[in-house]
Length: 144
Ligand code: FES
Image 1 (tube, rainbow, N blue to C red):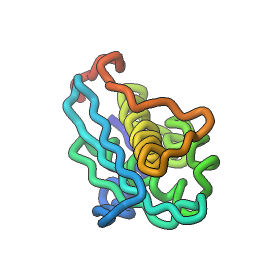
Image 2 (cartoon, rainbow, N blue to C red):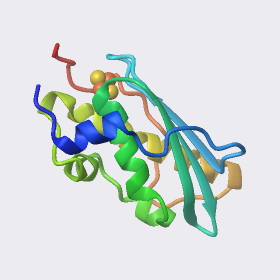
Image 3 (cartoon, rainbow, N blue to C red):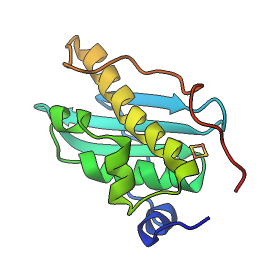
């Protein structure tokens, strides 16, 4: 399986790994088929994501996509973060092999789950944000 240099870079040197104590929002998502789990922590101030950290127990692509997702939303507003798609994450990594695209979906959903938690904790409604979902419907996982 061929990975781009950016994927290898974010896999080998993931950015923003860790936890945020008393985070404004925490989201955990998992893919039932591969068993990979991603946890995203947000620190939000005045509607802006001041800091973001993640912990991923998963495949290399899951680590690279969560790392890139944190880079893409750091310093952004909630509205901007909400627009982050798995495709944008994959593109920012110069692409992913088709069988690994579902890993980027996990990254998008981890961000959304953390935003959802932030909204819940603060009693606010974020337009266009849906409750976190399970990933049982994701594509088949191929052997690499
Ligand atoms: S997220 Fe499970 S194989 Fe990548």
